[in-house]
Length: 499
Image (cartoon, rainbow, N blue to C red; front, side, top):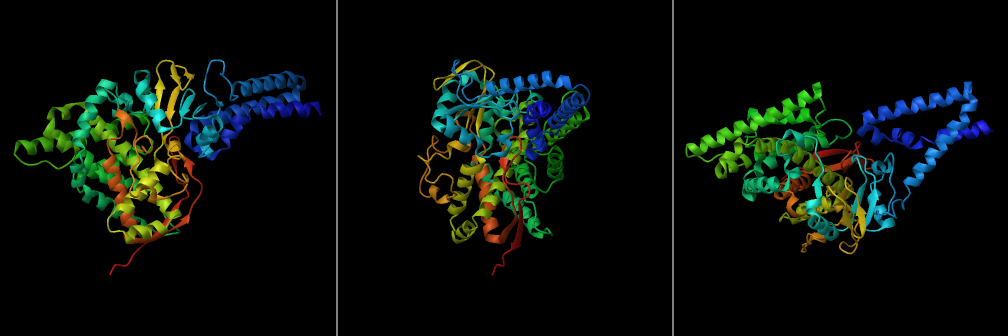
């Protein structure tokens, strides 16, 4: 009996690791970490079994150590830990798992602990302080701007001044102005035919697919890349350079993370970036040549830069950012398009509403409501020095996360906040302190018009041109960075007869 008790203590001690290894989403997101955890657990079990069979007396000290370690871990992770140091309330986790399986995890933290709470996040190396409320978050970002630094992105070190949203303040002001002045509403409008063609091709491919429904995500990713190559890179959609850019993006994948060292994976990643930058430089050369000859360059970001500030196209901070903006913009917008399909699949009556509206406003409201519920995630910074947040202390090295997605469910702003109701945007404009899916302050996304245009075309074409159904679904999944519809989500499209 005593031996069984001791074995029970030993078995319970590594339960967080076992839970992590048994969570499919976590395994898919972190296969290398999972392999290490499995090896550790296997070694742990082997030692415990050997002791039980050969040296049962060792079970006593092992069980004591395991019990003590578990107790200390639970004590350190208790919600009130750090109260004496004025740390925010909330529990930390040695192995974050629930964050991968509970879409409402952070929202439940706010309900339990209030508007400022601490937790552990799977992709971060230190605890994160979560902040509820867009006004509260904006005040923190503004007041402590010099004490908050950007959170690194995988390819940031590959660009001399860094990726645009991760640049130092002076660099960010300079380059953001350049990109903003090049990505105008007029340039987006000039490329709407490319947007419509890309969405039309994606939906036609979905309709032509055989079998019991199709996964829409690969088609939507290709559509966003095909739409953004002409817009960002200034490459005609039917050209060999456009085909090369789409192919390079396909090889990079959605989670492009250059490996460390001189590995083959890193070499391939750098070669793909170099190829994309080469396409940008080729397009820049054509735009500059057109201007020199008195012709108008292709309407695009590259074309506008060639006209307004041609020297910028020799700057690797510009050409590399353009090349990699294609990747980030395509991934983010494809995720929004994916959520739109999922949401309309859950609420098909809105497709009828879109068909009955000849102004495009219902489609716009569908996009805005999908952004509110699903695609506006968070604004995250690293504390470069100790901060004071709402009476709490945030140690240097911790992260501060303004939880935009959860703040968009404030019942004081949005009636029935968890319901999908695009009509809440009919005839009303919410302030940036109420609704802010594209970020805040100086780091607000520069692609708002682009995103709304492409998304609106998807809603309109899908509703007007097709009858469609969801044939398979499952719970939403966390993919290391964002929540997205289930991997099992499948749709079947049938072209509507027009007459």
